[in-house]
Amino acid sequence: MTYLNNKPIPGTTMFDGAMARKGYGLNKMCHSLNEQAGRDAFSVDEMAYCDKYGLTEAQKTAIKERDVLGLIAEGGSIYYLAKFVGMLGLNMQDIGAMQTGMTVEEFKQMLVEAGK
Image (cartoon, rainbow, N blue to C red; front, side, top):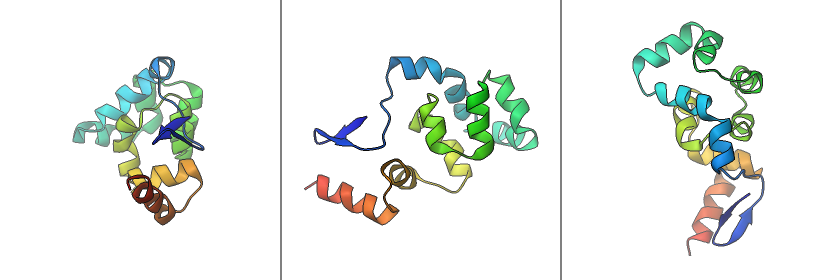
């Protein structure tokens, strides 16, 4: 669980060393999506592209299902996942809302309140 102003944010996953190791291939693949060639190759054959980076079956399932929270649980760093979720038309506030079970507007308001 992650924290904002020393208060836990329900539904969030801590990204630590173990998660970094778990998600290494996933994060490397997502980083490759910064390049147009990577996005093009991914679009042609998503699962072959995932295999190129050694994704686990659980990670590939989450990619197929567009399960962003599942990708985070499988070691995805939000900083690397940002390119993938951007391809889905989502942004960081959308992800935060998903993690907390809030609407995007509720999530944004929580951030405003926490910053006061």
